[in-house]
Length: 157
Image 1 (cartoon, helix red, strand yellow):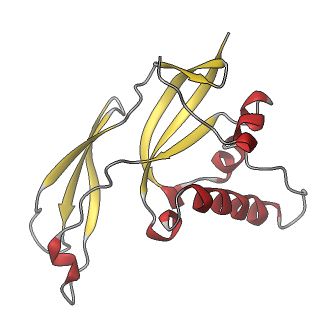
Image 2: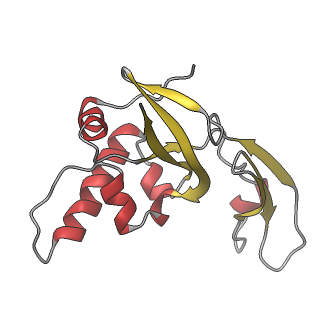
């Protein structure tokens, strides 16, 4: 059985029932294209197809030009797979690819970020808490807006 590791803070959130979602950096990241170093070109990636959230096909494109290739990237976990988190088990309930900065306010809370005071700046503080945690795990990833696998988790037993 595969393991899904959390740092101490996230393990406490998992055990306390506050963590029901986790993100993992997509490896490999969709390939860069040599044309993106040329002046005037903007390069992008677009998800063109996903099979059960497990395999995703990225098309590399340059706006205003023809599509310039494709790459399939596989998630390390499968939908419905049971994994070990510490001494407990979880079912991978859902998987989807997204950019790290696409995280929603509910997902920030479901990631188990530390509790923040509930005032008018609550969402800003929660978001910053997530960004700080993410950057401590994957330096520079937030700035690059890397691709991630978003896993919905459900405790088993």
